[in-house]
Image (cartoon, rainbow, N blue to C red; front, top):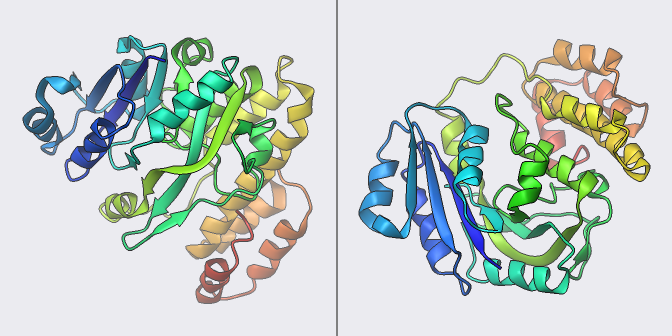
Length: 313
């Protein structure tokens, strides 16, 4: 199993060496490691060149083109039959690639292989929770159901995919700033076999993402994630297996409710109310009714409610 590792790099100088070190500590080494610098303004490129030299293929974009274009550049440059993605602020435990290869050898008909992951919040590791995923290595029959009321089954750092499969689904959608990876996983789930290992072999660094978000100005209100519209189109495509349509529709509802939750927590009650009242993807269920009730509460109590009850996950 020849695996190319692709790392999109944009202003992650503080973390990229940790990501790369976790690759070279793998019990199974990849065919190659490709770092795509997407117009960084920090010294991330210098860190990669100084510490890793010719162990890494470094490709530089002259300006910031976005994470989708960075990953697509890596896909087109890769020579491996498979591509494993690793975000520059995440890292792998040593058995990740070995476990991926074991999944593939047991399930050669598969095109997508992924493992469980953990969140790092700056103090401790917390396992992602998803009751829809199998407790033993196995095929995931309904990816969209696994996205409902749970932590997402796949992150961009926990998956390894056949290169030809990525090209077949059109790679990552350029210009989509949020949820672009979910578009790809959804398209793959409709056409390919997905296999999962419940071993926690990937660390998703929430603390790194949090430190980035504090440097930017928060928007006045939260808009619907663009991936919602891709999933709506997917549900309508004639080639989408009919058995997935109801799960996609329910996932659309929950994705809109996630937007409602974020607006409520930020105090944007009018935005939340407008979405709740008329969004076409919503259904009537307990989550929607709870959200209408929360509109009556002060923002401080709403935030406290969501801290203790992860109802909308």
